[in-house]
Image 1: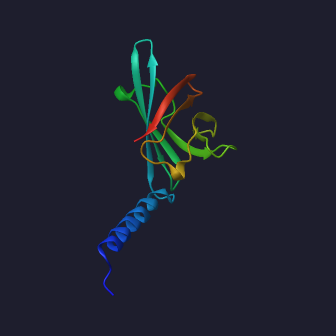
Image 2: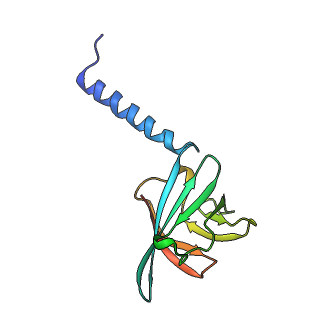
Image 3: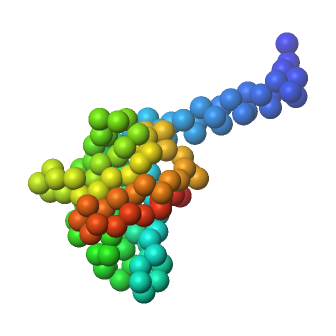
Amino acid sequence: MKPTRRELVAMLLASTAAAQNLWSDDTGTVSIIGTHVFDDGKKTVGITLVLKDRTWSKSEPGNRSAFFTTARGKYQTAPSPNIVQLLDANSKIAGQIEPLVSTNAKKGDHGNKGYSFETGITFDWEVV
């Protein structure tokens, strides 16, 4: 029996949803933009989480270190499962982002609890 138009649309939507879930299975990346208003204006930081090897890296315009002095490292999930902790080369916590579940993160997720323990600032963040 030939599928109806409605059934074809339903199958297309189901396969699209399944394909989107493939990005949340520890094989992709999560891109985050953090923002903070400093005395001299608003600044941003880009944070990339690589899910497969649980690493992170940061990028700041002008190669500055207003947010983090550490450029990259491993990350871990804190005892609370909605906290991603960014580690430096010595496994010391350089910062954290909450509430964030790295494996389920999607564009538009956001919060105002980004912390840099290296510089002492808090920042708003959004998955882009």
